[in-house]
Length: 337
Image 1 (spheres, rainbow, N blue to C red):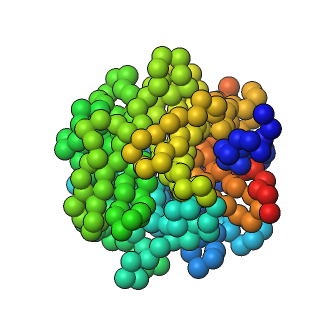
Image 2 (cartoon, rainbow, N blue to C red):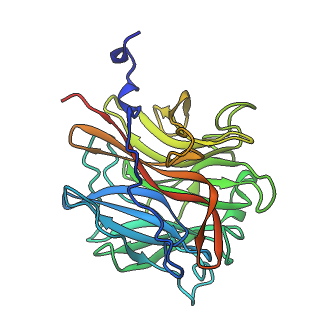
């Protein structure tokens, strides 16, 4: 079988860039001192941008960077913790913006009455993902100043598979409805599993879950996603099907980026072949290669992801020692003209 016979071949990255696109600053007190995670690439007025989540040893906050055609700007902190908020006191992880849903489109952000809309998740306690997180909604005129809008999606309102807390979400608009894909865990502590489900809304305020069960469950024992099936990135292919880029974690193993397809956004078929796997020892992603953000740029399909390198010598950040280097990397595949 030739590559042309496989309609998914254009979605499989063939090139990995060897250096991180964004690395942690390693500066104590900085919003991204300990790690950079969850890339979300987009365009606004034709300009390529990216939001990303930074970890500072206490919680998550969100930054924004722009590409000038040659290089990325230094990320600016735009979505901060809110000491007066019961859910954003320690964490504010903005993970998706409403954008063009076509995989081979521009990725241009979509405004509603002049507003950009995004989704975030927030854990209620200080520390690394401490407590059961909620998903919230925010809007902005300029992508720098944000205000919360609508309500919250709460884990206790969903099925048993999501009672431990909600994770990364993906907001999109299709057939005059808003869709929210998200992954969640079944318990707040211990050896939980993460799976992916969805909710729909007509007004960005009231949300209805599509099912009490996950739409993308974990795989069978031994599968690359037998513990986690997480971090959905959902885009429409040019044959009308939907592609869900997501990451899988194998029990006792490494995280990889994977792909599932659907004709209707409800029923998903997994492709067993990973899109991106960890690299050789010493490479920027020798531990995990996961959390996809996908966009077309010119004649290539770019796949940004979180690259995690296991360190033999821990990284020092002030008084903290980290066993890993966590940043954002880029893989891509050329597209036919």
